[in-house]
Structure formats: structure tokens, C-alpha cells
Length: 232
Length: 217
Image (cartoon, rainbow over all chains, first blue to last red):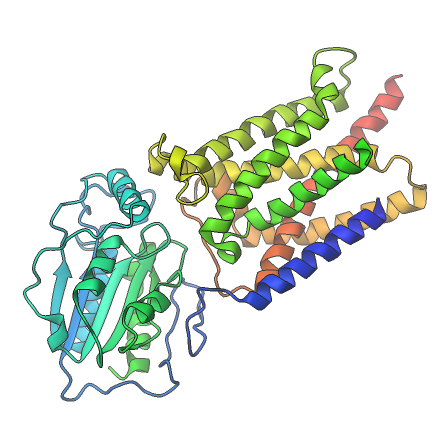
């Protein structure tokens, strides 16, 4: 019995060491991000360790997708709080825009998501399982005209909402700087920053900011720190 | 291969798969689903291998120990299959063709809570059976085993609280928190230690109940 137990433990440890060798797929490239204050906010560094593009003379856009169903939010679940009457991703997008300047644009689906939070959950899952590309309404801006694009989204079923796939399919950000930010309720960035790098191999994609949706309204300081690190 | 070896292999496999299942951020979604299918198959096989015990349900004397065993087994069976059902309903990879029979919002929350109940009940299940499984070992060996288990259990209790385990059981925490920064080996070892807490609880209960058995006979 003892021998068997010892063998099992040894076997498990070997497997887990092999697993750790294979690496955590979602670790961002470049500098490791750290959850310094444990609030669920990961700080970013430049992907090559240097200060990213400065703010002078650069056209900046903050474009984001945020759940439209702020009215029907379950206050108890705190997954997407009605922060000042907007979704948590929108809240952060508006805040970033107020700090960095430039333009701001919201990605709105052509076909609205259901009113209820659960309805949106089901719709999002169906889209993800079907690898769909939901259409979004025309933005008032042309994202390709900008130099620095902040891109924000919530985590839907542990990854990018499918509408963000449509977004990256639509535009070519070659030669541009993309700075992602996202909200989540436990999945961090879930490897999505790396996914964006795959969508836009000729863009410079920085390690972004992952904010716990439930703490969005308390994150102003963390966002400030992150932006300062980026040179804004 | 005699049935003892097969049974112990299935036990070991179930335990190993459990540690990996509870490490979603290490395995990712697709592998998690396949592990779930494997676990379901193993649990069914485990019950077939132990069908004589199932057939003995309702027969014979029900001591406190046997009542505890039976109650735990029933709860575990229910929780496990409910967990599996919810998981199957959400499947995007392994069994996507039969997915979607539950609203994903219900399946997701239920799967989160029930998987943690299953984990706890599995630990207790192992713990309740451990004295029987180690009955033939010498007294010194048994004492040493219990001491080691106790140490692991203490670490496990600390981790259960730190990782917010009980919050998931009662859906106070409605979304799984995945620490992608945590080293994969650490995730697995923490799972082992957290299980050890429930195993110790089961073993302690079993030993106490068996002592009271002896007193009454």
C-alpha cells in the first residue's frame, strides 16, 4: 500500500513537472505580468522591456466591446456590475480615454444580445462553439488611421467574445501599436493577448491590463499605474 | 491480472485524473473535457468492479460506520453524475454533439459548485475506506501513515481557505478563478494536499466509528 502510494505520488509529480515544462499557454510573451496587489489586476511591461511609443504626435484610439445588458445585471453575481450605468469594460475604456486622449469608439453588435445576463451567456457560448463572426455596426472611426489602438473586451467563456474575432478579421493593424485591456471574473487575460498577436503578426501588441470586472470601479489607481508604465 | 490489482489501478487512475481535472488552467478546456469523459468511464467501471457492495445495499447490519459509508457513497454518486451531466451539456470539444440540453448559465454554475462537492466527497470516500485498505499493515506503519496524512491535511486546510474552495461549494464565488501565474506543478500539488484534508477527515471519522463499533459488540 505504501509502495503503491509512493509510486502514485512519484508518477503524478513527474507528470506535473512535465506539464510545467510544457508551460502555461496563457503566459504573455515578453515580461511576466504580475498581480502585485492581488486585486486581479496584472501590470504590463513593454513587450521588449522598453517604454512603448510616447504620446506625442501619435493618433490614439480606444475601441472596446462591452456587454450591453447593464440593466439586467445580477448584482449578487458581480460579474458585470453596473458601474456608473455602464458595463465594466466600458467604464475602463472611458477612463483610459479620459487619461490618454484621442478618440473612443464602441463596438456594437448588429444583432443585439439578449436582455438577460443568462441569455447573453447562452448566446455567447453558441457563437463560440459555432466559431461565428457576429457583425458589428459601422464604427464612426476608421481604426486603421490611428497609430496606437487601445482595444478592450470582456472575457466570454474564458476567451475573446466572437465579435472581437470579427473586429480583428475586419481591420489590418500592420505597423500599428495595439494595447489590449480586458475584464474578467477569474480567467485573467486567458491567453487572449497572445491570440491578438496571432491575429496581427505585424502589429506591436503590448501586454495588456486584465481587471476583475467586479472591481472595475475600484481600479482607477491600477489603471493609472499601468498607463504610467506605458508612458501615458 | 487479479481483480485486486485492477481495482487499485482504477483507484489510482481516478485519483490522478481528479488532480488534473481540478487544474483547468493547466490543462485548458479541451483536455479538461476529455479528462471528464475518462473520469466518467472510470467511475462507472469502479462501480461495476464493486457491484457486490452495491448489491449488498439494504442487507445486513448497518453500524454507524456503514451508514456513513452508504450516505457518502449515495451523495457522491449523485454529485458526480450531476457534475458530469452539466459538463457534458457545456461540451465544446469532447462530446459537443450531445451538448446544450441545459441552459449554459445553469450548467456552468452547477458544474462549478457540484465539482467542488464531488471533490470533497471523493476525499471523504477515500478516507472512509483507507482503514480497510490498510488493515493488514503493521501498527507502526498505520500510525506513520496517519501522521503523514495529518500533516498533509493541515497544509490542505490552509490551501482550501486560501483558494476559496468553500466559496465555490456554496456559489458565493460564482466564477472560477484561474491563477495562470501559478506553476503547473504547484497547482497539482495543492490539489493533492486539499484532497488530503478530506481524506484525513474521512479516515478520522472511520477510525472513531470503528472504535465505537467495538465497544458496542
